[in-house]
Image (cartoon, rainbow, N blue to C red; front, side):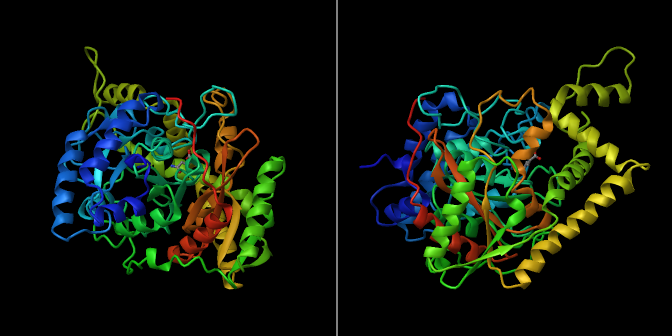
Length: 495
Ligand code: GLN
């Protein structure tokens, strides 16, 4: 029999319901895999007692014929989600030892649906980064390696722990968050599926805030089918989050027919970036052919403001972050610096924030404070907001022309080596999100599907962008693409 931890959500759920395995067995298999995978540094707070308790409760529920969507399925939770009584640190030293008194809505909904929490997953500090190298816990390692080369690679970021854990079968699925690409880019770097839903689809309550107008939670899974199951359990209206939409949650799983005949798929010419590797171009062309062969109509489209997306994002996201992170002052939560005789409250703030925040977070706070300052507010922040409106309008225009979904590469490269970009200009790192940030700025749903391998044997992903609130349709198009791409490769186990 296949090892239980290698199963996806759909397969494990069916086995559980048929009585062919138990949640306790699934959970034990995952806990063992986690113990063996210390080298990946994916799980940073393990919760085996909670996991076993929930697994036993799930088995009792299943025996009683009450098996909700995620019942008995072991999953990992990004450290950005507040989990009651369990460390929730956003991978930052400033939140050292913080154990919330409350549970985030998304993780609560998963628990209510019977999911088993295995522990908290590593990430970039406050979700700022694309390589998981800004974490206070140290970087995550990608289970994939290049050909015969042992050099450790990044799993991407900021949800790098979630991506690595799912790709290495330490859990059946995980949750991530995506502010500018943090679900889709790591999914692409590790050969898994990741969807960022429409802004407002999932509650942000209890998720440590980075940039509130962009942040969304989403599933990171081994298949599109699993993403549909998990998304349905995670999302829905929450009165505790005023930006969560009061809309019914469709049965996403039932919408997976694989039939995309007559769907109009847009190929945006502005995403053909200069200097893009030939392999990425090829993957994109192959994906286009696959959707065409499945009966979709391919349409060339234009999203003219694309080139302004990254600069606008790197004004808006730091602006919101500088405001959100003002609460970490050494007074209320986490770390407080050791003070010297005569230090006052200003010294306490300064020392605490200097010690508690890493360099990337400090950089963002400084940029954010600058673009919001009286003299520069109009020149930067207001201008970026206007650009954001234009980017959103680009998408509205193509959807008004009847486009159902847009196909693009997920990332401009495959996973890169850890440390390779640390000395580079930070803008090099920011370029990782060139294809994904537009989607957050416009509040749209986007999914990354593994679609091929590069010549060094590393996974590459394609992104599909959908109409707002039409995750069901988007998942179905992704399902067709997944079937056509037939991506089955796994990282060879070296850890
Ligand atoms: N890499 C981007 C950033 O550093 C996006 C991060 C995210 O989506 N959380 O801001």
